[in-house]
Amino acid sequence: MKHLVCCSNMLNERPSLDRWLGWIKKVADGGILVVDGGSTDGTEEYLSENGVIVIVDNIIQTEGYGPARTHLREMARRHFPGNHWCAYFDADETLNESEFHQLRFLKDYLKDDYDVIAFPRIDWHDEAMTKSENEWRISPDWQARMTRLYSPIKYIRRLHEQISGHKKIYANPNNPKINHFHRSALQDKRDFIGRLCSKLHAEDTEWGSSYPKHPKEDFYYEQYKKQGL
Image 1 (cartoon, one colour):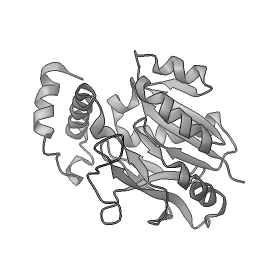
Image 2 (cartoon, rainbow, N blue to C red):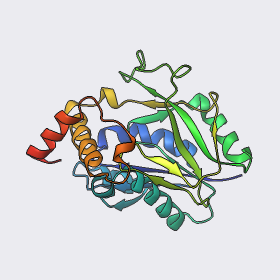
Image 3 (cartoon, rainbow, N blue to C red):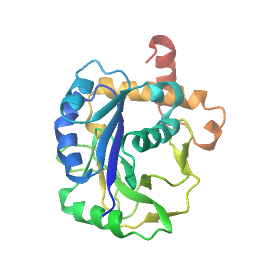
Image 4 (cartoon, helix red, strand yellow):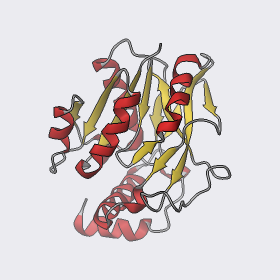
């Protein structure tokens, strides 16, 4: 058996944690680690009380999503040595329990030629999952979220992070699907993410030209300049 550490970056996610921790504990047989960006709503305390390793660091705000993913891998190796896989799931994401067996099969039996597993992500408009923005069979929004912990992998770009230094990516439509609920979040949270992403894109002097602006990015950047994050 090859063990899996589940990791996440979080900031003020307490309302989502009962659901998130409920399913994460069923798949993370190697441990759970969260890098908290300075929550003020009890996120850090709740996670610590429930056996999660919590590290306080606002790396996403200062360095971006790519470095934050690489940092999660480094922290997972430090705090959970000997584990084989590392996976990253945000607080507004879930996997269906009916697909946990497929996740375990991949974890234990995937050929060593593949050191990355990509999951199709479904962008739901509501938590009841009645309407989605994308049809995963046609537009799966592949997410390279599970990596062998001791492979020489790094994530690059401050925004829309990309993986580098890997061998092969196993992207199969039968892989577990990530349910993503960002669109059902409160407007204040969505606005914060909009300001943060516009900031990171503007600061990404190395890779920023390699991905296009979001349609509302200029609006959020003006908002960021006026009020900050």
